[in-house]
Length: 216
Image: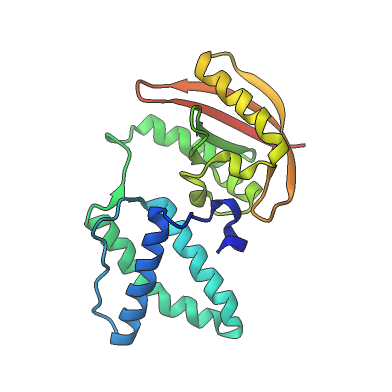
């Protein structure tokens, strides 16, 4: 998982790590019994999109380990995965955004998803990624949804982090858009030089840095 997801791999104590452990137990029990097992989701409160991205990455890793039987592994885990996702949705353990999504916001995000450049929405004071488009996932070498809740700076080389923090801090203090040369590292550790533009989006609850990054 670490080799596949790099910095997006969940930490040992993360909720997503516990969900993965419970999925593995559920799937093993379900396959032994031939169906009928129920997921144990008590005490879990996790982001559904990130969880599903991590579980899919785990299944792909298991399929790779299985070699020629990889397609069989994917096939037998398909039904447990579908039922686990349904259980997460129907038992209320998945975190959802407050309020109903607005049609204008859905239209904006659909448009951003089609943009070829990397787009990241990042909490300015914590550096946590709260949204991303598929191009961001492709640039960083992981599924887009696996990026949610991850610290952006985990995808930046050590010597590039002060630059990112300088510009993120500026978003907490003023609304002036910023342009700069940055550097990121994908899941495999390969560096990527990017030309960035950053704008501020503030609500009562938080301030987001909206970042568009284009490889140089």
